[in-house]
Image 1: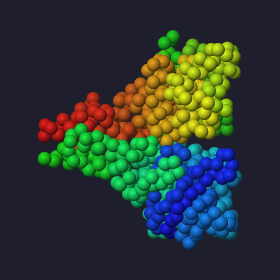
Image 2: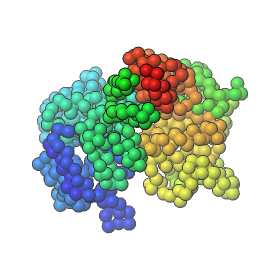
Image 3: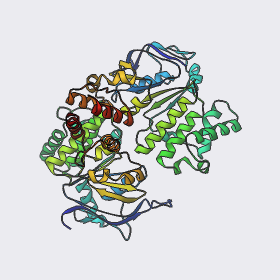
Image 4: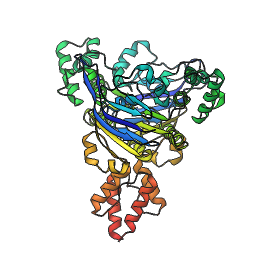
Length: 287
Length: 281
């Protein structure tokens, strides 16, 4: 579904001495079936923005449309119930929210809560645990007996079990080791590509992930959407990104240094290792 | 003997209710002034190991952990060991206890009964060392993640420890916060000659250390300089670690028969080398 922010602003604790503008006048459209990354330093408003999309927060000004739903400051909480299912949110450190006695029951809790029968919910839970790579031998274990990486997967299965169309991921790989990070990102990418109805919104500090998976990248700072575009567009604005405390993928940084030092024309919008290697090989072969 | 601040001998450990050993016969000697990065996958035993260094965990019969000549098994030594070995943890939001940066940095000193005049001097020194000058009166919630972690390190440094342990202290920070903290750690090592042990699975960070120790399932499976470690493909794979991009790039270029000598290991060197190659072609 399409997601559209129309001049959205959000303020924390309005009317108190602690009032703090978190998001100001954001306008953007995320077309259906797109993978969008949101980058920006800590406190730039990234998390606030994505929480507005699934109705956890309501805009103080402006409106959001998410598929058929429209959210304004007048929207009632119960009208957002269905939206929360359609736009599933994986918070930072989602494993902190595991609570049931067994993995299977934890994952089945959400769908049951949304009205599935116990049997249906269990079936869904089994399917989604398989998607996230949790083996059946772990289904009856307590969530707290699993490793950190497994707990994270189980928690993600709990969100997928609601069969969302939009998956909102707030730094989903934080704290995992490099192999775990790569596995989880690949899993989200597969989930996204396996159905044309699905969208992903990823909040990340990892420029490599943003470059590798996204159709478009939103750059936030001080609660404002500074600019956005394809990975190529966004990362070609290296100086602006540096000023915002952000960086570019290492492959690009390397190629732009090589271009500057050698004084030759080099395409720097290369995000994967192999593409970077090919670019360097053709650089050496040119003349 | 006397040249090592850390001496770990035959250390094995099993958490209660767990079948597997969290540490298996770990032996590690670290001389004064060295920066060691301990790395490995989630659950490899890195953080457990760190908890033995400041006597939060105590070895049973066989193993021994000796910090600056003091054995952690001796109960009377533990307080002294914790003063020698200061630890900073992962989450910047869980570490500040006082209403302002300077109060927070003073917290440990106050507990240790340091006289007021000396405390004022040491607090300011530590704040300056960590590049927080001007933020003395700032409240913790108005600091960035990088500033919070630097304040936590300042609190540790004020106690004049001989060993600073950073347990994934940068993993929750954004890239600029991470760079800030690492930059300050490098300065502490260079100007204070402090021994530093960082626990991280970011090999870009580990590449800056003098020595990398690789752990897997409670065992040390690799120990050497960054250059030595990055050469061992199988070791890194086994430990679920990812080589720094530049090392990966060099290896892939060699596969394409681009001639790159052994001594090229950094971004700068590779750029220069490629430019030279281009000229001679």
